[in-house]
Image 1 (cartoon, one colour):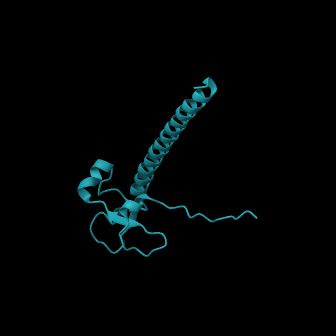
Image 2 (tube, helix red, strand yellow):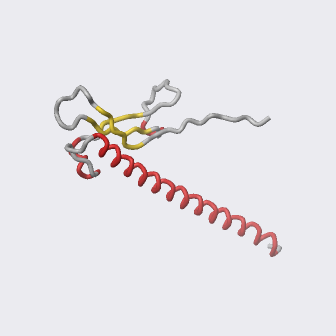
Image 3 (cartoon, one colour):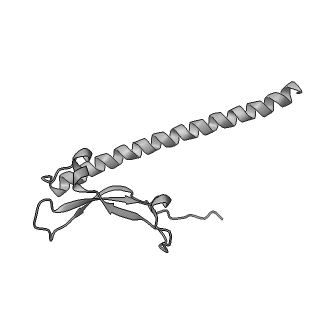
Length: 119
């Protein structure tokens, strides 16, 4: 019997959070959410631990945000940045897989070459 498992899609990256009670501009903030094991606290008991932290306003300009953006514009910019980061992670994963295949081929050729040649 084949077991089917439900996998939750974990979002990590930039996230805009609305702050409706805030009176000054902007009425939102930027948070980064991470599910990486390196970011977890040591004594976490959560089933799916995550770490969230606010991005300081002095970093906003470098990321393409400004305080006069409305929430929708900020969400669109965060979506662009998350898509770029996702593509970058896919490329790194692809490179690592290609390297692993090349290394395993080299190892296989070393051993197979010795056996075939009678060494």
